[in-house]
Length: 275
Image (cartoon, rainbow, N blue to C red; front, side, top):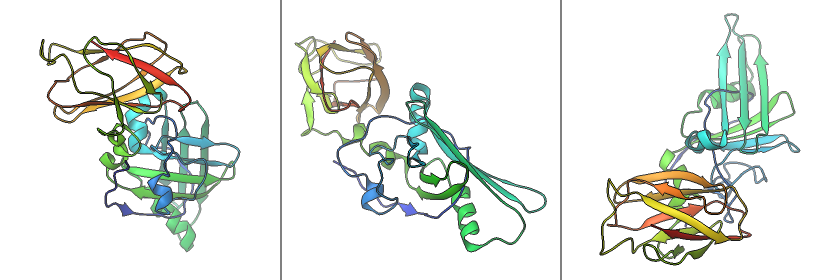
């Protein structure tokens, strides 16, 4: 399920940059991204479903959501952004840069000299200066100069739901059963849910943290995930680095469903159980 909300669009061509850095995420999903279906950005392999930073060196493109990048920066090192510097003689210097989860980087820059700018140059500057923590950015360059930048400013929670744990629901999530039960197989790009917890023996709460286990499966590692629970507001991210790499999910209760979104390639499965 893709959640759609009204969003304000500011799309313009621009140049160059580095500044509003953030941390991104995961693998492309199967559904067409909202910024493609709404004609926000050109359809290209550089765009990914969940807003993760993507760098395409062969086509000189990079894109991503600053909100998603900030969220995942500590684990992936992704960032994307632009800045504008004004000089005393009316020169304008724009620079943009990005890094994806694989460590590929890209950057471009443009210098406008003088106080009289063309319409295209003005639009470039406006685009770069309108980037904020909610922005989705799409940039093309020629290896040095920025050729265009498209910017959309929207709500951060919209971006967080797009392709992430917010896309999991009761009907598309695999129930991994009861507390201490047998491990259940889940697609490595799918959704899992916990509904039974440890009832009626004891309740999850501040002093009882869930231990999520992965005792089997045929997935490749590392495998990232997100978890969320609406009634507690619990939310977090993590990575399974190998089989039997126990994860600890704090802040839960057994009052409502826990959802877990996996970010694998889709070509394998992981077995999950919990205590």
